[in-house]
Structures are given as structure tokens and as C-alpha cells.
Image (tube, rainbow, N blue to C red; front, side, top):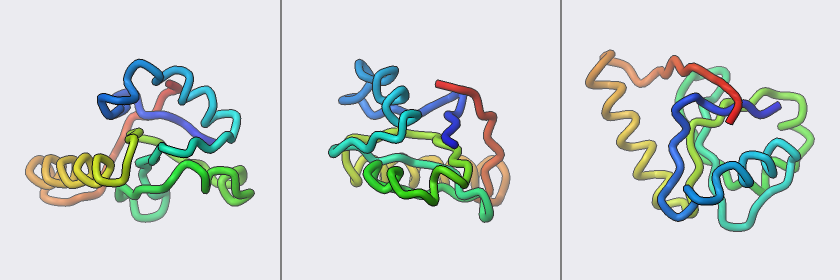
Length: 103
């Protein structure tokens, strides 16, 4: 089950297609040039995953809290680095507490 953060990060190249991408991810369709940034349910830390992997049965049975969408791994890594830095400056830790709503 995929849920999306209320403040979903979307890289510039994907902003116009945001709703369509979210809809496709909810229907378990992986996209070739899409990286999903999500919060790990056990560690509460951000991780990056290519959207093709969302087709695996594991993700049907485990919740995935998506906090960002990026068109390539480099942009995803830049966002995660910025997010960790901001969270650490505010809380002194990199554990994320994220409000989750549908896209």
C-alpha cells in the first residue's frame, strides 16, 4: 500500500505529471525514469528506490510512505541529503515524523 506525504517533493521535470505519476504508482505500475523517495517503516529514515521495484509482491503487503519523486537518482540523492540536513538541524536526529495523505 502506497501513501503520499502531504508535502510531496517532486523534481522539476515531473511537476506537470505529478497526478498521473501518483495514480500509476497506486496502480502498481513502475515507470522507467522515476525514483521514489520513501520513509523506511522500521528505521524512519529516507531511502531511494527505482519505481520498477514497486511491482514486487513485497510492496503490496508492506506500507510505503512516499515523500518524494525524482526523475533520476542524482536528484533523489540531492533531495535526501537536503532533507537529512534540515531534519538534523531542527531535531538533532535524522528520524522523520511525516504527515501522510493521499496525493
